[in-house]
Length: 243
Ligand code: NAP
Image (tube, rainbow, N blue to C red; front, side, top):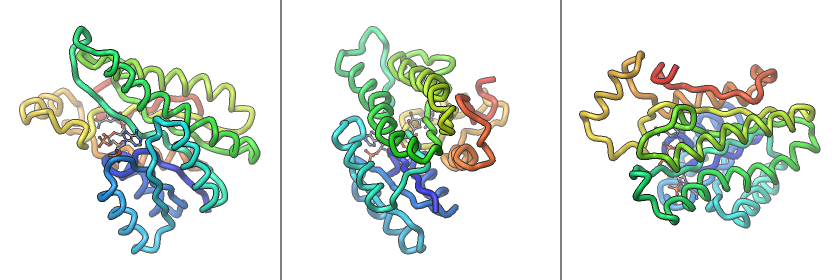
């Protein structure tokens, strides 16, 4: 049985990814941080369905906590075959108003976490000469978003990280890819009003926003052996919003 770690899996895209992998027969380590109650309920529900899941509370922007999570996964499941770096935060603010704290938080949670989780996981994958890393970026990392300069910068950073690491790890048969979702219906976009949502739908050729399940399907494919010859790529499920 293959094992996956999904960071930030208490809500939204990470939760849908974790559910999809568990249903598809993976041992699934579900990472959560602040949403303790909903995460525990989610994990319990999956266990009741007979699925092989474990939860671990960790702030993945903290190196010690990320290390503890990875050690726990190895203890419980014996290996790590797939890592999905999904945990993230967003913030909408004029660049001129950004504080140093806003900037640091954005980098720490969205980018440092990817470094902290990937490095120890790779040590295990290198021994087996096999593994898949999937990083969740955003369309804004490709085209940039006004009033989200720090978010766009970290998401572009994740794309650079993915491309560089894929070159380094290719000879070790470890694929590193990036999913750059368009606008997806989760808590992350809860501050958009109805008019803004309508405008976004109308600007999308497929005339709808994405669902967390749309992203989960893409992650499942990239983790599967059907994607063994794909590495260093940015796949953007976005309904045609960015082409
Ligand atoms: P969401 O509904 O707000 O969920 C964010 C998740 O990240 C939560 O499970 C949260 O866990 C977790 N998280 C945040 N900080 C964390 C930390 N320090 N340690 C561990 N977990 C942490 O957002 P989402 O829409 O699902 O976003 C998931 C990913 O997709 C993010 O990387 C986001 O940038 C990216 N994305 C989203 C969209 C979109 O339109 N929704 C588009 C493109 C890309 P707790 O609540 O337990 O703390």
